[in-house]
Length: 245
Image (cartoon, rainbow, N blue to C red):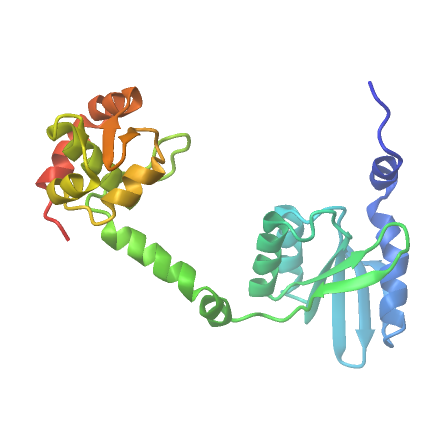
């Protein structure tokens, strides 16, 4: 077995207690009086009427978030203290950060080598409306995809299954039209028979490998396309029977 890189070895020897002194010193410089393990709270501190609890964790996971949320019952402000994560800018970590902001739980990190303390998120509840305002385009895309699907045939909660998106519906109608036209035709004729406005794009992009560009302005069906005609026979029949939008 190959030796682990030096930085990975260092990463693994850090314990939750190694977070204590840097975070304690950080808040003491802000005027707080701090102590550890006060009624099971890893760090508890006060400054005048303000009290803060910090739960120390090696990683930010559900258990850490759950524990911090329970501390909110008795303490005005709650932080989770972690080591600065390597995946700080990943989608997964940002999703966790979103959850903390919605719950009003702060997040504070400690760099392993330098001990530098950084507040990644303040313990302030972020209103849902502020996130929704930033994601109007995603909401619109969601509603558009839903509304434009001719049939609603997907089963929720499954994985590894081909989803019936609006694009796949259109591609199947294009495939069927090409089949009806004898397996070889122009995009114009396919559009006329399929009633799919983007027929030319679907034929050209060939996302599923169902089409072959055999000559200028002429497309044919590939072996994969014929297999799809059999696989989606019932779906195509239902699509054809569904009113066009």
